[in-house]
Length: 611
Image (cartoon, rainbow, N blue to C red):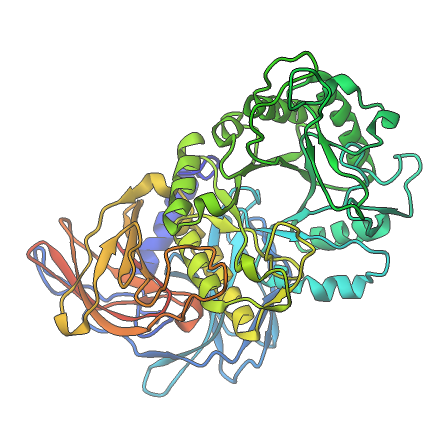
């Protein structure tokens, strides 16, 4: 279990009692058909669900909450548009109903349970006269006192003085609806070596960022105030080791830089367009004097702006580099030293550091001082299987104690001109990342298409927006099954289609074209099996560079068998592609060492849970 997720004994007993009472409930499950399972009449190793309640969906209710994340016991305020007469709402965690209510109006409240680090799904539904149910809408709720345990990272990249507070709120409501709990402020800084616009005694009204765009300190402050009101944390972006061409005038010493040769005549630099403020010259992140200088500059930032932490960037493998004295520089070791120094200077602030193409990842994670792990993923890690390799390596580096966020830019080759994101490519990539236990940095006031965050050439269609909301609801509601323990809990499960006429081939991870790929893990007493649809995929590259990934062939009523050596008490499923993530129980039969059941449908991603 991730560090900090461990609950005390009293809480564990309380959760167990709730789960026990819910498992005996006849309250209907949301989804394509199901109730909490009635007791099996079968004996020995044979059993199953004797009946399920028919459930359909008519997803006409739009739901929102007032915050992206809540503390235990905090009041959650829901707002519904299009609430039908007679609607009820139930709150579920890991497929178990924990509470129900009848909303008296389109706005109502719910007191979040006392269990920390827990995801919930609120389902609005009605019952028909025949006892069947209709799901009208769902929304997730994350109850976590620390956002870094289940990070859902977003960004903001424009801070112009013309941005009004109303526009700020309207443009970023997508992040609120998707439960983004941390926001990276990208290229907000005045200079990389002097990030604050002005001094703590004399803040500038406006200043220029690296691209010579206007930045307003008032706008930065207003963004922080807004995001804090939504329960989000705010991280300021900056390199670990960058200085502009006027750095000497601001007290940066020539002896702190890194050089391409031993003669300290050719500073390493990240060259930028001629119309920009300056190219960026690189320093030794392990140099103690540079660290002390940046700790002071950050102190100015924290004294002036209510940031919650520092998002540290790097530039990947620079090759052989030297310090002023001609000694070889070990950048990953320097990054670790820099992280340690920044944490010592401001121990109450969060730290996150980018690992570009996994460069320095083990050293960064090994400090234990970053709050989660963050990888910017490029063409040298472009296969779906590489995403697993990154997340698994991070899990091992951090001993399974920290989750991973991937900065993985989609449809990259299309980002140079106006157009739309390719919905199938986005959803398949997110399905894989989320199923593996990761998160995807992609959402702000627009969706990311390349490493320069203000680039908004590609837009989201309305269909993609709807689906992204459902995927983030799913990742949030089922965070305890998706993100606890990570890939270290991986197990082997052989799924077989028992009807040859379906022509559906299952294979265990890694993905193969023309198959349904499974990824499975053990979470407590549950076996969680993810079904990822590669039946129609035209590539095994997550980047979908040119936006050509086709929409997957949806398959329905798939009879399957899974080996099961112990008694199975319940099988249920949920999918962001089906009934907006509402869970449903599945009828099953257990005999001769196997369980047999039917998967109602598969579009991109299903999650099957055996208890």
